Image (cartoon, rainbow over all chains, first blue to last red; front, top):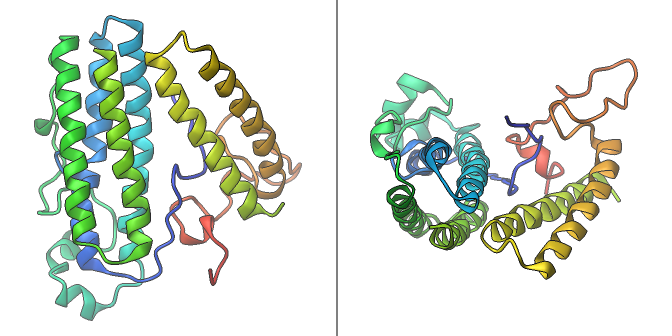
Length: 177
Length: 90
């Protein structure tokens, strides 16, 4: 089971609304290489793991990914809160706005709803652990792209933290297989 | 220590425990890491107690409600609110 802790894994304090930036941040919330997909992937695959190391690794990294999903949702929400009508219209955020307002919806930057079609659970520990290492690499690359498109230091801080975690998780999956 | 200092300290210690826990999953015989892990968890427990006295419960069903006549779990702010992590104006 799980227990909720009333705190973030990394603090988020964004002062300036920026709907355009919020839209691209959605990629790591509900995109195919994002944090929600990572948590569902690992927490589903763990049932078929055999060694205690692999079970623990998938269970605990899957759990940490839920905390990362929360950080990405927080980034999106804080970038949207207080956005003006002008900002929404000028930024290309209007198409998201008519469907979701300033709410946080699990979709990619392109607006595609989150789907389990972006993940696998193959029932074979080695196959799944290789997918997990690839998943961490893809998420790392997405953070590289997000960081390249971001100049707001309040957004960069949590992005850099999350990027670092992809490197650590890649290492742990490699050790677990 | 004020709420913000305690929160930062708690977040740091809990994160260290999470990270070290992942390391220990794949290095279960590392005695030095086990000792360090236990040290961090004890320190985090102490800070969590102090934090909950000033900020209310951290866990959804494991924290004592310290106020006798008011349920504190649902108090604002929540972690995704800006003001949860930082004082206004910072």
